Amino acid sequence: MTTWDTIWTNAQLATLIAGASTPYGLIEYGALASKDGKITWVGAIKDLPGPADTLARTVVDLNGALVTPGLIDCHTHLVYGGNRAREFEERLHGKSYAEIARAGGGILSTVRATRDASEDALVENTLPRLDSLINEGVTTIEIKSGYGLDCDNELKMLRVARRLVEHRTINIKTTLLAAHALPSEYKGRADDYITLVCEEILPAAHAANLVDAVDGFCETIGFTTAQIERVFEKATTLGLNVKLHAEQLSDQGGAKLAARYHALSADHLEYLAVGDVQALAEANTVAVMLPGAFYALQETKVPPIDAFRKAGVDMAVATDCNPGSSPLTSLLLAMNMAATQFRMTPEEALSGVTRHAATALGIGDETGTLAIGKTADLAIWSTEHPSELTYNIGFNPLKTRIFAGVAQP
Ligand code: DI6
Ligand code: FE
Image (cartoon, rainbow, N blue to C red; front, side, top):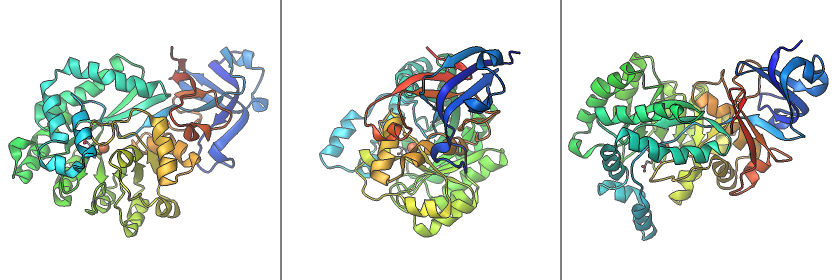
């Protein structure tokens, strides 16, 4: 009686199920089945309801290979024009990221290059970065706007992000980050720009069905909590989830604001006061760790990891891939950096790019763990133990990426 499409058998399954009795939710000598793109069975081979070849049309013997959920990069700025290698050189000569930004470089230089690029050119520019992530077993990625900073160009960026699924097998979640920086045409009129965001950009992007969540940059070189709150109010009115770049370069009280709006996530958090950790815990807001930006900016202040642990705040890990503070297209390297720089454990790092990353995107019931009913997005690795995914530096042990139950070439 064949009921399932595929069974992967003889696998080591890192299920990442919350509260599992084994580290990583590991099942040795495991099997996993899928049908119509969903996981239909997960467990030990000995508990299968019959011989594998009577249960599924296709049986794949994995010979002991490790299976994890497909990886999720829950914070990226993957779509942009140009690059910032020259600014990288300036920083090496001693200028700071904030100084360059205040002088009209930084984010605003990427805004100029992104406004100048056509939609097709942006798709072409973005695909190699996306491929780098896909080659490491990534099956879901969040992409933010934020380099358009006017109605046409913010919508253009979001359309580019959405169109990537025409070229690759990937799930994309889009985030409107119009409150990323003040465009030069609004210099000295930040409140007016926020009015544009609330009254025009956000409603237009939402009406075009281009927005899955709304983000902002709460920082001295970004926007104040009062300005971000106006954006959050509007997003909430439209029924959209919010998230925030908070406490990256200084403590502005952004995370507290995010918690008040039950944000899906608060991201960066190097300068978060330990006293504000509890608010994130109470709001079930995920703390997204972005060690690539910490590394590239040679930051020395580490986010309060231990306080997150003690308070039970879920920690995700993401690349923050962007042309300025984190030109990083390796989620595996982000996991290693999270361990080496932030002292996260390999198990926390892997949970951070699977279960907690899914929660940070509001799709925790669809993906992020190996559980019945979830999408059969999987990564199959030639490693002996899941800790190797975090331990290796610049090594990619991916064997096969499974997207919605189908092995990808
Ligand atoms: N924080 C970041 O790390 C990125 N955006 C933000 O708000 C950097 C964006 C850039 O420098 O282009
Ligand atoms: Fe970012």
